[in-house]
Amino acid sequence: MTPAALAELVRTTAVDVLSARGVDTSVLPENVTVERPRNPEHGDYATNLAMQVGKRAGVAPRELAGWLAESLAQRDEIHSAEVAGPGFLNLRLAADAQGAIVRDVLTRGETFGSGDLYQDLRVNLEFVSANPTGPIHLGGSRWAAAGDALGRVLQAQGAEVTREYYFNDAGAQIDRFVSSLVAAAKGEGTPEDGYGGAYIGEIASEVLRREPGALELPAAERDEVFRRTGVGLMFDEIKRSLHEFRTDFDVFFHEDSLHNSGAVTESLERLKESGNLYEAEGAWWLRSSEFGDDKDRVVIKSDGAPAYIAGDIAYLKDKRDRGFELCLYMLGADHHGYISRLKAAAAAMGDDPDSVEVLIGQLVNLVREGEPVRMSKRAGTVVTLEDLVEAVGVDAARYSLIRSSVDSPVDIDLDLISKHTNDNPVFYVQYAHARLSSLQRNAVSLGIDRGSVTEADLGLLTHDREGDLIRTLGEFPRVVHSAAELREPHRVARYLEDLASAYHRFYDSCRVLQPGDDRAGPLTIARLQLCEATRQVLANGLSLLGVSAPEQM
Image 1 (spheres, rainbow, N blue to C red):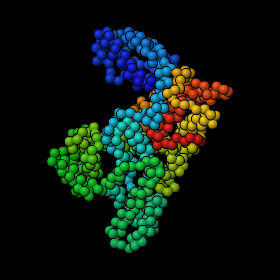
Image 2: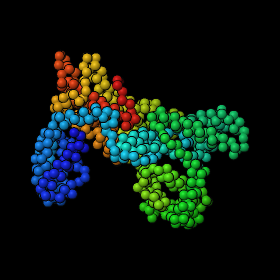
Image 3: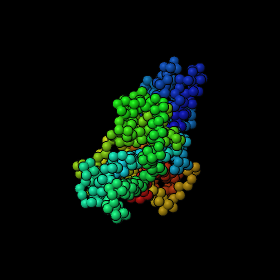
């Protein structure tokens, strides 16, 4: 019995109890909360339902808890139900009900943990979207890991997710990139406000290899060659490094296509017609303050050039026109103002501002031997995704970037995540999976067939450590649900660490493969099923993070 199933049982029981006593059942919440108490002596689960609704029901909470306890104690799934304090209800599950969690895990396999919270919801998830002027830096790396994990978690809850990368290939940053390439091709120093780093020289050399006469062309034609070829090379490198990081996109959307297609002009004309774009001080302004923004925003500057938000407005409209019901943006720490800005843009266009959601990620710092790592061998002033992967590998890099909430800055200790010790979180979780895989191989080598989970006597799993492990397995669907609902994939990583810890404690207390003739006894079979269920959930969780589940280490 998972926490969700127990919560439903408690609510159903509450409906019956209140109805039998003529109490209005509408006081009951749609979803009842059951939680694992911090002190195991208080039971397997606890609920404060009686305290939550007692006053509205006109019943003393402790009395209502007593009614619930009396009724629940008669259920086969409940071993005991006890009232505590002012109206808490502490529950212990029957062994067979706990064992049903193991059976559920093994029956559902790779789908255990999935749900239907966002069934068929069409989601556009835009993340990374780094300027195509250099390799992906640490901030973009964090989004590459966390964004991809969020997409996986949303899909596990039924959403149809399109991962989208927005290439900012229009504007001044591209001009500076091109001038940097031209200077490098000529053997000159980096221009003021230009881009430095060895990668600029590498790309410039490749442009000349492909276009040998580029430098002899008139300046405008020369720059166009370096723009077209250089930006393309940079795009390709970004895509390659992301793919090797196990982050792939369904759509690569080019900013300049909005301008070239007339989409920007069309969107702004629509805003003018609605009166939500007005002229003042020689510029055109969006009435964004009327839709929740802290001030109005310039959309067309006084020189007639569109401001950056002009492209944002057209891009949002394009997403909605493509049928996306939820547009999720994952942006860097310097984009906090975009939350109200994009919602205001949606409202000004006559759209639902709730269709827009902006997540803001904080900075990532690398530390080695207690000192910050700031310089890249190739990119110069910033540390890149490739630097991180080269230092610790894809698994450790992804896991470390995901396991903390993205709205908090994070320091990654390169020494720690390179160690093969239990102090290293990703090693700790992966080692648990490898250990469980080894256990199943050892059982086979001993001639032990754990058989079908439907035939195993899972009611034999009565040890405290077995119960703790089983209840931890049962939490997984709720963790995935919360991770999707709150947009917090780090919850999956932290859960996996708790699960690995529960497994290691179980293994230290409960021998699975016992010596002697009893090795294939019913208890051994039941424990092997529990171990396989644990391995399955670890694999499912790691898959949601895009981290491998090794069978041996």
